[in-house]
Length: 272
Image 1 (cartoon, one colour):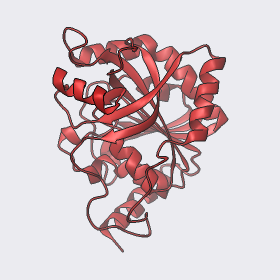
Image 2 (cartoon, rainbow, N blue to C red):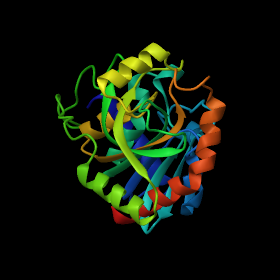
Image 3 (cartoon, one colour):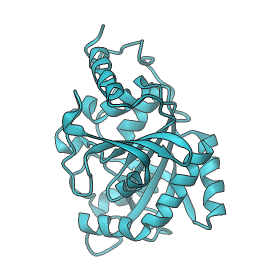
Image 4 (cartoon, rainbow, N blue to C red):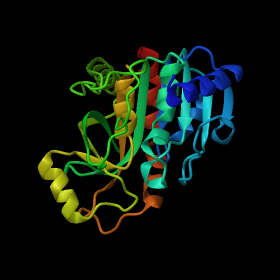
């Protein structure tokens, strides 16, 4: 039995002891977007620092807890705050919660993030359906020995973001009169924001938005057999497209658009 497999058994056993039994949809809620977890009914809150093998979130706007309960008629398990490579965690720790979701029997994963808009058609506050991604983090969470019990050595990433889930998201957005953009997300390590030259590169390569998360989680989600839906909140225009960049603006923008975001994700969950 691999070390990863042993850790998954320990963590899964602990969460089941806390009452996490059936889970229909798992959620990873990014910077400023964690408020959706507060709408989960019959909620059980489990702090990260009490969960075996879990890291601890250190970023402003991340509550650092799992919230389990009911939302839109489904059993959901939400990460209210995620882990990032730039915090100094290895990729195995950044993506460990996704492994846990799969171990709990989750089949559907919704990943959200705050991102910088590279496309010149974006305005801060736009929501974007992620149709594909580019891994510019300089590493991959699957590097190292592979446990065939968990996933195949060479997973196919040609449909990393589930097309059917994407269609559901677009239909729901139309019903709610929410303009949902579509685009490609480029993942970089951070924690610095990108330079204007890097943003020009991203645009030439076909990126619509840039950010410091999501890509590792989605890779591991696909490796684990999960169906993935990704949504970005475009919180600012990327470097060179506005005067300056700061994390406070990220939080302020997500606060402004949170009602549309919550309504969209709630209704999508009910359709999955």
